[in-house]
Image (cartoon, rainbow, N blue to C red; front, side, top):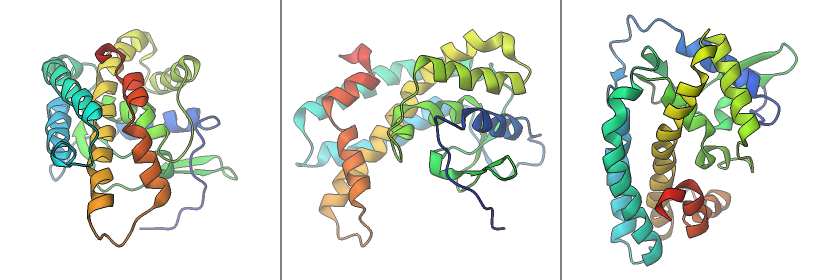
Length: 233
């Protein structure tokens, strides 16, 4: 371990830097990574994780009946869509992915024009789409900021990333693949928030953050869920 000076990532200023960090990590040779979990079915893994997390919300009297109904539709819809994961795995060679790529896990050193991705608690070897998707979905970008990617910013980030990977010609394919993966990344953020939202109100946990609770609460509102999953409206 070492101390790395820097500030947290600013989505509006640092998309190019983030794209370069992702590209550099995702190009690393995966030989010798036998100790890491290899996830060949990432959508299924995310769905199974979310299925378990949501139980606490479904079982709680605190949960809103309309939200429960929406989350059940989300689960059923994505249960069918996860069958498409074998096609997603063909877009990129497998890579080391971080899986926890919110803005606070980046350090930007403006003085020396350096950027780092830190907090490697849960790395996997799987498709790079998992990192790219998690980085871009609103449940990640709104966690510590008030940023949501617009179309131009999404294109900017992906073009920078694919240029570094020398895969510019595959932009439209990757964008289409991310459209599917993003639904699972959003489901993951919502499901964790639903579990933690109940836990915050029903346990005596010592660490409770007001801002975190308010963010989780905002994720469990019908208008926000409908924005994430418009096809379920």
